Amino acid sequence: MSVDTSGAQQRAVSIRRPAAFFDRDGVLNVDTGYTHRCDDLQLQDGAAAAIRLFNDAGWRVFVVTNQSGVARGYYDEAAVDAFNAALREALAHEGAHIDAFYYCPHHPEGTVAAYARVCDCRKPQPGMIRRAIAQWPTDLAHSILIGDRSSDMQAAAAAGLRGLLFQGGNLAAFCQRMRVP
Image (cartoon, rainbow, N blue to C red; front, top):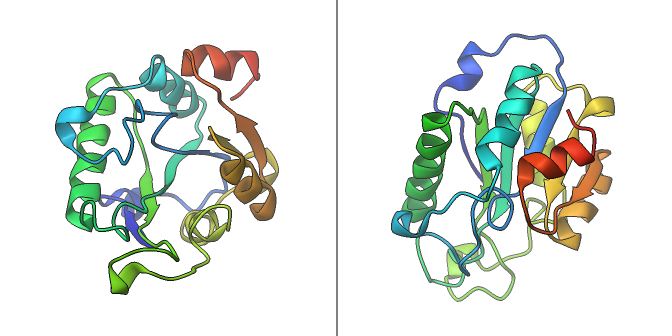
């Protein structure tokens, strides 16, 4: 499992705060199928506004994303890092802040031997969420995960979080309907 906090963790205080965990493709950005090229980055409607809601409420915001395209040989981890950096920049341009990105490059049926395995970080397993919780003081009782697949909901449940299934549309409006934050 890989993580990019871009130095934010060093600035984090030790106070437990609620966290919003977001799946990436299909939730924060439009999913084009194994999305990895920066040129394909298109923010989901309301993504920046949704993240700002959590930022303004004092929540931490994390991205937890399966990236099996690495294991399948479609792209490498550098492409994931570049896309995440572009996503971070696009959101920051609209006043939204991600505290850290966590991703799983593994898949048991991968064609790249180094990544072809079962692991605890691939959703529906909760490894990415647990790693974030271990690295950042988190109020689990008030934290959530927003995802677009059943594996996201299963990972949320396994980590003890409330899972919210996003099925498209405007992400900020969805958060407001779900009364979060």
